[in-house]
Amino acid sequence: MKKKRKVCGKNKSNRLYVIFAVLLLLAGIGFLFSFLRNQGCRHKKFCDLTFPDGYKIKAELALTETERQRGLMFRKSIGEKDGMFFVFENFGKKYFWMKNTFVDLDIIFLDNDFRIVRIFSNVPRSYEDAPEYNIFRLSANGKYVLEVKAGLAAKHSLKKGDVITIGKCSEKVFRIR
Figure 1 (cartoon, rainbow, N blue to C red):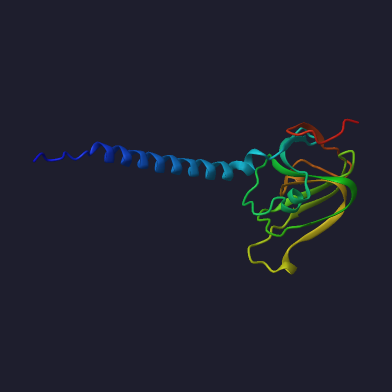
Figure 2: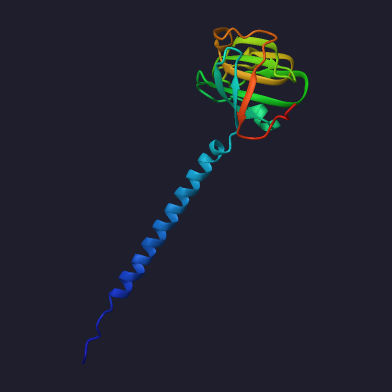
């Protein structure tokens, strides 16, 4: 009687296909998570702003209601040349509060012509688990609001009536007058 020879090559190649498929699946999942994690960063919009003394900052734009509501919430730091520029549809009373904003800020309200109408200096941060009655609130008239690191307005002698110049923006936001 002739013994049948076992074919091991077929099992080995099947095993290799399974291992390859699992590795491919893991790589795809890793790529997807990486893509989704970076999605928020890649689609942020920015504008270059210049103070009257020539100091330049790059401000992240808050154009939608959702972006304006979130603002600088949950940020642990803000750079000397960074900011958040809130763009509203109309000039009028704007309300801000520091809930979940973990950095001290200067908050600058501007009119339709980017002229400063009000500056709130050294607005205190909120702290995790702070009761709502302890969270700083403020309001003023404006069409645009600029948030920058606390102390920057004084450092550059910003005052009511000064004009902030809008430079290059990553998105067409402002009408040319």
